[in-house]
Image (cartoon, rainbow, N blue to C red):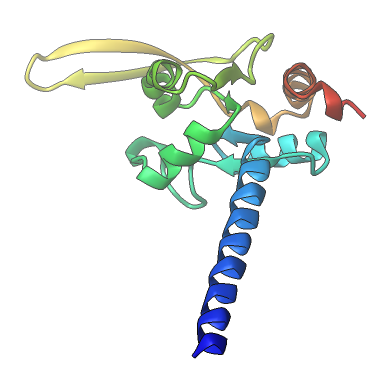
Length: 169
């Protein structure tokens, strides 16, 4: 009977030790978490950071930004992030202020800083009003232009060095 009780007690201590180690590892990994909106941004951040942090991509592959809805798991990862790199997508414009208000440690950085965006015009008519409206929009697809990518890379680099100076090399 004593051997069984000692065995169960040993298992309990071992289990507690393992859980504490897992929690410690989870806290260590989540301390250097950066979020981005789309996969091309993640590619740039990973190349610049050289495996010194984890990158969370908000918009899943093959999904549409116009009907994207945040899942609780996405919000949780965003809350754990130190930095959120935006790139001018519509859903970012809607939610960025809310993220800043609700996630106090989250630094929101526009990757398109110092980039002259290409202006496009979106025109449509409202059938119930029979009025013609023009809306100004900017083409957010800056990641497709190699010259603009250089500016975005510099923005990423400067932000990461400022946030994680220990990883400068």
